Image (cartoon, rainbow, N blue to C red; front, side, top):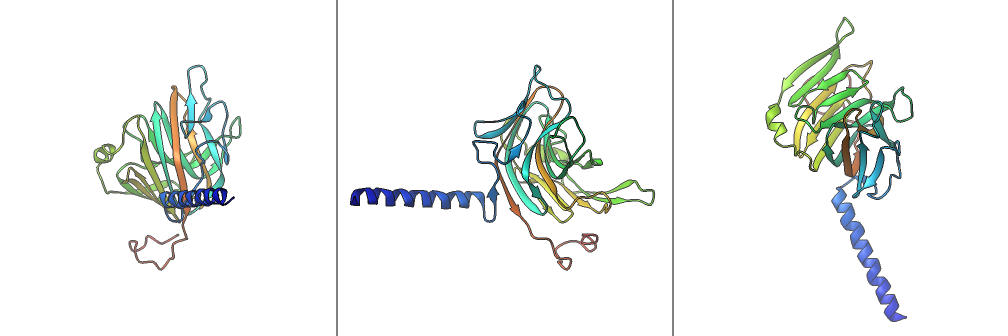
Length: 254
């Protein structure tokens, strides 16, 4: 009996240390939203989405194309947050939807809203795109302030903070990359492999979104394969209007 109790005690210690190590790996305040084995907590068309090699995997083929962009949707909501994940893409285009909404379509897996874009090509990885939501909002290396003019049209005040070519060098083709999205009030910033790729300050009061769905995209078009793993999120508090760590006027409309 004593021997069995000792073994059980050692096992408990091992599990306890493993749990502490896992928490440390996630980072303080972060929670994992993908268990690495199943699609529990996610809803996507089973014709395209599965778990392979410990990653959420979206795949289209010549024989099994998607009619329009389709998404796998997390059961939670995103407001102010810090999201981190790893992705790999072979062919095509994809993205991470946040503060998004259910859109019209032939099924339940159609989404619109802010998107952290990425692709197999050389142009769009890291940009902020508005899926069914105003189109391209900010390109790589740009800080873009969105407003609406007196004519009711979207206006963009753009400031360069990095060269597109320098950002592109940090992105690995057909390999794993890390993506980070930080959304606090209406200040949205994307990073790939630790490199800031774009920033949006959305002052379009009528259209901007303070919260919404998180989803992963599988794009219509040529056959492609996209994978996501190590998906973790941390909720952030709302920024106080009186904070002084932003430029004068940047807190307006927040």
